[in-house]
Length: 402
Image 1 (cartoon, helix red, strand yellow):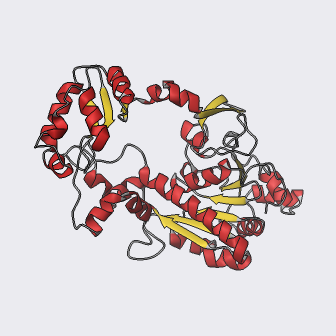
Image 2 (image 1 turned 180 degrees about the horizontal axis):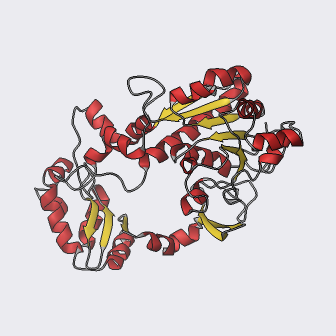
Image 3 (image 1 turned 90 degrees about the vertical axis):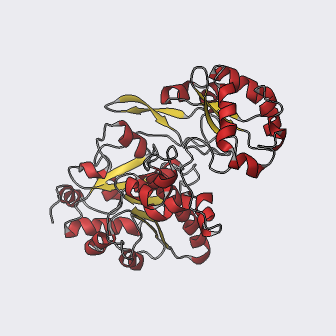
């Protein structure tokens, strides 16, 4: 339970305090999930705020990653700073870190040490490759694990060089997986009274994201290859050029395939002996896609989106980011919230992708974006005061002295 300043008790995680020791993206992605749902997140940063702790504080990425948090500065290279962190851990429910394993052991913030001090605390760790093993001591970044997980081998047009995804998918997957694990461990603590060490890595999480591509190897013994903008096993399902852009279509079989072929003027195609089974369509995918592409290129994207959706065929345009937020459905979903930053002014921040009923908010739902990312050390004095430090002790701590 939160000790001290409780601001979000009416939100689902409003009775949880989280210590955020993360850097880069994977760790902050995990912590952001907890902060969005009301956890009192205290971000511990070094005096001076190194760039490695999250980049330009006034940059869009930092503001997106670190909203809804409080910031405390502590010099963890000093005994006094380390003791302050331990006293903070005494009051916390969760600690999230993504240090390399040797670093946290050297600093004395490893799971065993913290667990002895606060057995109820859930300790969450993200690493590049795991906490031990041949690569356990290595640092890891998103693109490295995109390659090592097999993702880059199946991404891109057939026959081209391995291609990275356009988003930091390894980081995001690890952050989301750790957040789920932390919530599971908090639930388990209600039964056992004991916190667990919850771990994932960029590599584990990215392999997990490979989903059916992994089972094609582990069960079928097949090494998946690049399939470009088309589904690797279902046909027709993919991206096609139109008269003025591109359209994505999902019409792999059954009634939907029949409706699709009728809508584009190829009603006889499903009965064609080259394409009348799933296996035949897969074997003859290039020929089938050529026929479909010729038809779809004759009309603009907007026409096909209307015609195909009216026929019950899943279909949508391919947007650039400005077009995403101009789409009427996206506008209806209200994917952003505006917060006032004391220096930057109003900021439009992407809300949490999950919604739920039964909590305060502008639409009767929890408001997952409530405050901009904090300034460096904005909350140091109030947090340290809540830990019992005197004004003189706070002053010395904030100066980084022993």
